[in-house]
Length: 262
Ligand code: APR
Image 1: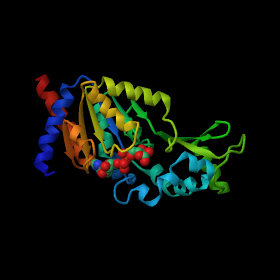
Image 2: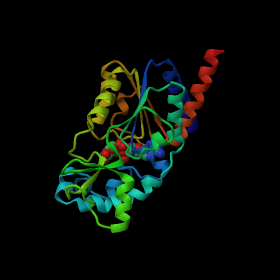
Image 3: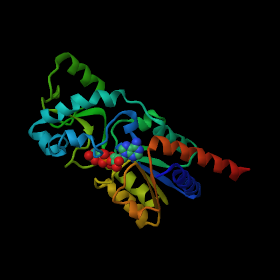
Image 4: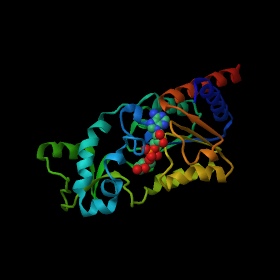
């Protein structure tokens, strides 16, 4: 998309945000790539290096947790040290000026919260705690990392029952956390505008949320640097880098709000 068409689309989206009664944003890994965290399905993405059926699936984890931990040991430092990028800050700003109601995120990196977003539903969990698959004990991430640094024994096991620990992220084959799922389901139905930012929309049940918004009369906008299979259902598609597009949206929204109040 050339710069001119991006600016025209940004102006259209800004107007839709101002006119909407309730806007929800659904984010995917694409919003964190400019923070240095690879996404999953772009060329060079995580699933190109690690087959998801082996490294990202609960059944393979239960058979042999070492595979998952081999990948986690390599990618975790990058996620822990990542900082929010202008796209995260732009969404935090839109929440602050009451232009978006909430973020539904598939990301586990916590960057939305680090950027200042408050209402964030992490439908694929996060890396803040580790859960024992035996007795369901829950450990803070920092405590387990400290122990791993000292003892270097992978996979980390539960102090209570000796079963392997797993970060509180949702692997393929696992249910989504109930609270976040039902909150997001309700938001998708009630929002008259859903903006999808940086997701291929390949994975259910999250990929059904935009369909719910449309089913209940809402509009869908997709901002992505590649086409998605849902583009034809969208009212507006902005092809571009989120770190560039979202700050432009915030700027335009503020301009329109100022004119509206004058
Ligand atoms: N700006 C805009 N779009 C981007 C950017 C960027 N800077 N970087 C990447 N993208 C786009 C990619 O082109 C891709 O279409 O973001 C999308 C990311 O898609 P995926 O890698 O499939 O990530 P996501 O949609 O979040 O995956 C959903 O799949 O494997 C599971 O649990 C995992 O939560 C993940 C889920």
